[in-house]
Image (cartoon, rainbow, N blue to C red; front, side, top):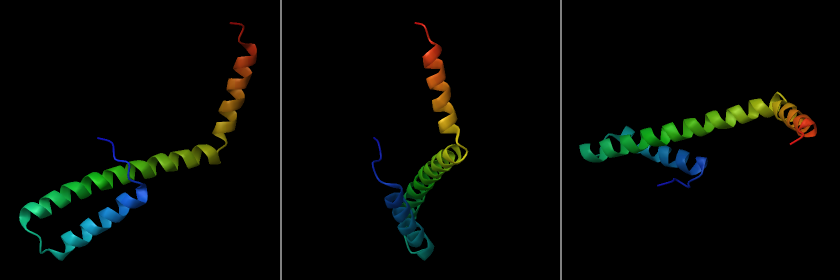
Length: 80
């Protein structure tokens, strides 16, 4: 099942989970379940941040324009 929540929604849910766990008043089973959910959310958020960072680097370094120019150049020389 795909998670259609935004980064901000996942981050907000993670904050709620952390606050609940920090209170320390949850039953063990509920605490473990929240911890697992928090771990998954943290991993998802970190992955999305990494992807966004990579996109920013690509755009900042002009690699997209270089790639587009190379593709156009190859298209012009393609005789198929």
